[in-house]
Length: 138
Length: 396
Image 1: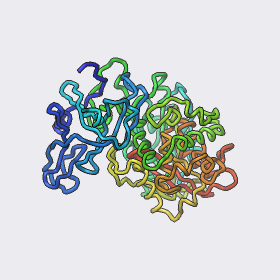
Image 2: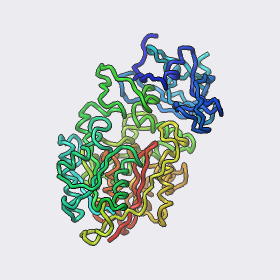
Image 3: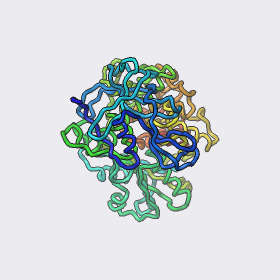
């Protein structure tokens, strides 16, 4: 994939590797409590809902909805602007959400409530979960 | 109680060291408190030495202790707590516990000189050599959940809060602009403020977009400067030749998840918790407040504090500040009377405390709230998951 934007890479470790590498299989994965079903993000060693330590990565559908979005114009990293930074919420659980980018459409068209789905941008062994509008992604 | 205050020169690229500025502010505060350095037995600062990007931290408490040769019974510096004013909260607790009688508290920044002409860096990006072709180190910890998505700055993270607020409550850019315009109007009366030229709504909208909905003039101005204060035992009040600021209540609660994007209600963030907590610890009410000095690192934050402190209902800060009359110097709730961080400069929380004390003492000069004695002032620091508040009262 040519012309990748500059990105600061996450430092992979035993706690976060499942998240940052799951895109190789086309999956968006979060930790999930195996006792009560609660999704934990960011990852934690213990379920804060039920106290169980039985937590394991599970794939979600990859479908989501833009909960909030800002279009960044300022040059922080020398890359291309403008771009859309969004908080994406997931139907699997009311408080499951993450910060990401919405790509695949002009950033000013990204709006709260927009249906999006995950796509991945690979930088070496890290697969960034990004999102594209559902309608535009075919 | 806050018995004394002091401030160094404040400006853009003063070219002076942080310790040098801190000494100026500290000596002024100690003298103002009616004590000598030999009587200072406590020292507290935010955020402590070595924290954050260039120019963010100021000198650590050991450096200041060494420079002033203080003999201390209690000392503390740290970045975790109820926002920048956590250092003041800690000092109040130390005095209340009898560990110290006079605590010197300071906050120093040299962000303007350190950033030079290179522009502002994102949080967590200090020293990464961004844009210089250097290879950035990999990001661990909580920053891995936003910075790899090119959300480098609190400007981005808080813009997401503002956008959600605009969406849920119909808040408008014209309403938010009043925070910046009001600050500039007050800064015109403050000789220490860095931006004093009048600003119109057109000027505001002409400033470049940083990250929607924040224009440049929604973002505070990095400066060099040091603010210091002395927290003393209440018994010291009669020894001081001016009114003092009694700490009536502290709001330090944090009940939501301590995260920029995981906090339950993006439209309120942690200000909700600290604001509500404040009013549980006093007999005073929002109607008693004569002046409000509310953190405006970004203009939107002052709006969240107006709501969190109960000056208006949740989601109603837009209509509350519309037109700007209510929050003007002669309005029903004078706001950020020194010009806030937006126009007086990013003294990072402590500028608001300094101004509240001046207003309570009736020493704010041309910008003194007219037509009444300021008896009660509320001060708030922080944004996002970081929030602290204090209620100060005049004790003559």
